[in-house]
Amino acid sequence: MNAPHPVPVQRIELPTGTLDLRIDSGAAELDALLGFAARANAKRGFLFLSKVLGKHWPANPIDMLMVHERLAATVPPLGGAVQGPVVFIAMAETAVGLGQGVFEAWLRAHPDQQALFLHTTRYRVGNGPLIEFEEAHSHAPRQFLHEPQDPALRELLLAARTLVLVDDEASTGNTFVNLAAACRRLNPGLERVHLATITNFMGRAATELLDARFGMPVTSGALVEGEFSFVQGALPPDQGAAQRFELDADRGASTAFGRLGAARAIKAPEALAAQLAGEFAPGNRVLVLGTGEFMHVSTLLGDALQRHGVDTVVQSTTRSPILTWGAVGHALTFPDNYGEGIANYLYNVAPGQYDQVLVCHETAPGPALIQLAGQLHARLFHFQSEDHVEEVPVR
Image (cartoon, rainbow, N blue to C red; front, side, top):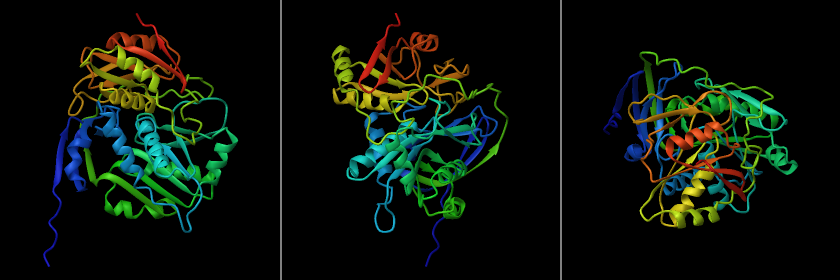
């Protein structure tokens, strides 16, 4: 019997080092799902830049929702010895929208089963207890998870037996391990973990060791799987502080969209989409822009606009400093709308590129948002709840 041919390794020379990548499955989709970028971060000089995440790259809402459904389908079914609610946790900031979409897709496929959605965050809201854990390679390493304050949602969390962790990519698994351990301290009854990621580059050997690392059975589902290695080159320029967490600081983050837990899907802004679609000229190209951790609503608005026949893509601002290279062809810098006093960025969007730019934000309007709207000739929409959206005058 002939030995299998070795999988070729792709080498990417970045300004910050050399990335070697072996693809074990999903190679046919790689270019459609992923690009490569160089991070301005001495801890990790590369970025697997997703094209279906709606973060650093303009994404088609239909493609995004399809990815949500595919990743939701990787969650093993309940039954037999495994019962109880499922808790979905999305990783901030990049995968907040992805995780909420996967949770909602799973609910649609399992309408009779109980589930809870939470997302990690770098902002405190309210004065309830916080679970803290570390994302060591991040430019902003302190991550938090708010415990639900609603008694019914808290009961779901404490009764859960399955934990589903959602991120755009898995590279080492360290952050997942840290978060799962924090959750298990709160809920010792957790029996299994599932990792749902667009890409899994931990490699087969590391993936096989996950049960031992987590201390319970672990499954995983990804659209692309393989393994990487990175040799650090020249250090990128120092971008300054990327996180200024203050325990008592109110950054204006909302409690209405999942930060304190949600057990149902968010209602799409259908009325707003219908109104806007009626205002746009035929053939207008529209960008719906989320802000920071506030991402999923922009996907829902983009999807609703597409259903009205509007040519729409979705993206988000970010606190991640990335070099202009590879999959990042343009960068804008502006103050963050959460008031931490750190730089925020928008990639692959140039002023005038779109006929309409719609900025969706959860924070109260202020100078940072007004400046962003001015740079992009954008309209601002303040989402105060699912049923209360106000357009903020900017001209």
